[in-house]
Length: 194
Image 1 (tube, helix red, strand yellow):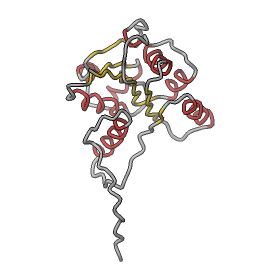
Image 2: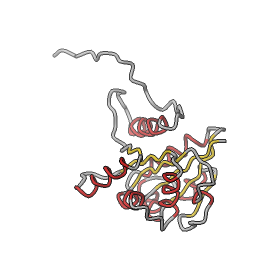
Image 3: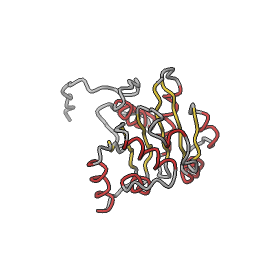
Image 4: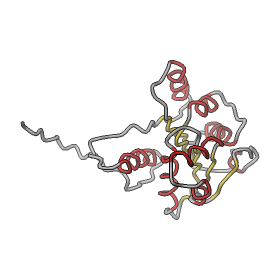
């Protein structure tokens, strides 16, 4: 069974982490391990109709962000990697600077030191030079940065279409075919005339 860590930090966009959990829940060969930051719990209540308990129920295993001795804090606990969705600038900074004072940052640090895949979905705009430096440093460390930037070649009709496409593209990075992505087929677009 493949194990994957899902971190939800305190940035706007908690629905990305929730949608990941909803999709992964139905995969029998994936075991999801969830870490919620304190501020993510606030954002769940502000931005969604979910309760924190409902979000936790989507995961196979839930770890307290305060428990830096949890299984996912050790490299001997094997995972395929970790996704932080959304990733706040504070969490990005903690990860880039190896500040492992909470489980979310510690688990990301372990994923990096073990050479596993770490994917962050940073959610902030506009960006200042400090954010851009963090992105650059993260990329140098081998972190995959996947901001939830919508694609429009797939002609999204709803917000769910936009969310699903971003989540599906992140799952692609782990070779998890989600069926959430409308694949580009190389067709030349047809221009409408006036």
